[in-house]
Length: 164
Image 1 (cartoon, rainbow, N blue to C red):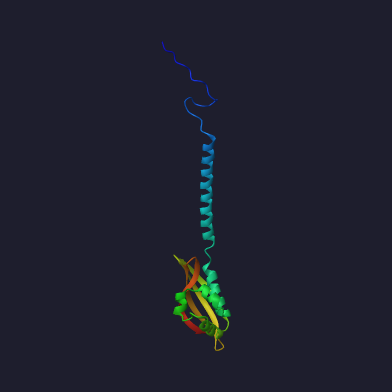
Image 2 (image 1 turned 90 degrees about the horizontal axis):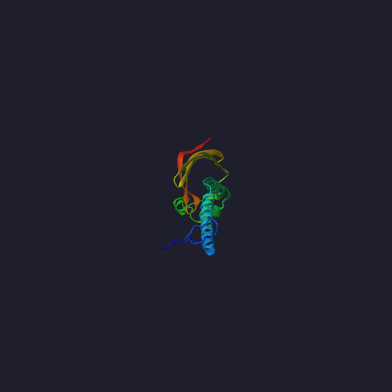
């Protein structure tokens, strides 16, 4: 005759026949979880930094006008694309400084800003003096997102300059 032998009792709450997980298992699992959390936070931080550090196309337009008014060639180069400088034949500092030395006071007002994919388009009213008379022109600036920054990439005359 065979009798069923009872299983020895284990710690409270343990199931018979199932071994308890070793401590090192929990340490490895916790370490992997912590590493995954740190990587996720790092990626989120990097994405957040890129979003907040995208710059502002309006600042680029302000830098462009400041460079023109002060004759600051370095600021002009930092706020424009190389293609724009070549198109306007202002691709060297000597030419730029000669052109801006003949300019008087230059003022502008942003009338409208239109956002397009990769571009900010500014409708601008520009006023300056020529031969002692106030001149007003309507311009459209194309400020392009390029290589992590914003740069003036083109200017279009909307209404020809008129004297007032």
